[in-house]
Length: 387
Image 1 (cartoon, helix red, strand yellow):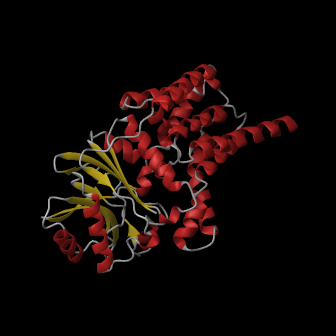
Image 2: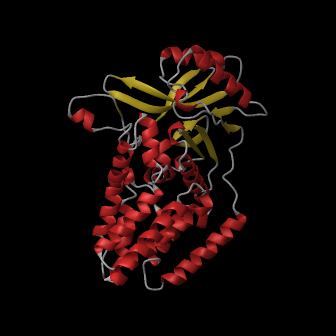
Image 3: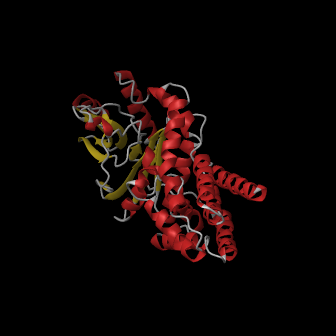
């Protein structure tokens, strides 16, 4: 009994370390998360598989309680509750699909890996080990995703040491030759440090300052500037006229985050603005569950929830460039990225308003995850965050 308890403890601690290190916000450390399938397969019972899954997921998403507390300006309890609720689907699926039959483990693991990657369970499918494909197989595209999937299946078989050694060799080679995703020509992302005021302070002076920031960033041949999520606040005809006037004398364009509100709720969007006017470019497919997307409101006749356009446009066209936009939470889960890549984008644009993640690794994880996906499919990447 004592030996079994020690084994359970060691597996759980090792899984927590894999989650914490793999999802520490450094792209090159993402392959550490591949230890999780091995540890999961070594469990001797469903309760042990549950402990291993819990240790991994809770460690990987450890910044959530503090981030939610900052977002709501409250104590840690709402964040802890959301943290535990978010882990429920991941842990439950990995527990139910675990089996003692070693020959069935690869199929079981692939099944659970697919289920937690796509809606509805994929809505909280953070910390998916498949994200490491971008580090191990940069530039391989869908072939790399297939190779990573095969590698995950191999890690839960009896000859897993050989598979782990092969993947480690690829990891070391990638680390030695790693380059960050390139910027598209004449595009530039601007990071801001405006804290919680971005998107909430909508005065004329704030908009003028942002327009000046865009003009300053558009030097040296830059023609399209990207600003973070919520940079424009509420998108109204007045806001559109003000920004359009700011670019009346040039050929600069800007992509920026905004919010469109109506009586039923709101959309988190990206808009494109140039001297000819502004247009809504993209509506977020997956807002943050709980804090933004609150579908239960409509069930009781209330409004105020962000809309989730699950299968809305994954690609938008800017000029003659096909763009895959990813807003904030969409950078943490798998299916929005893969949905976009199916349509063959030319550029990936990732924006976020991460002031509430201060003191956590959430924003760094978003960047690392997006960089890994961009490297897997060899796509230029533009990032713009507010902190």
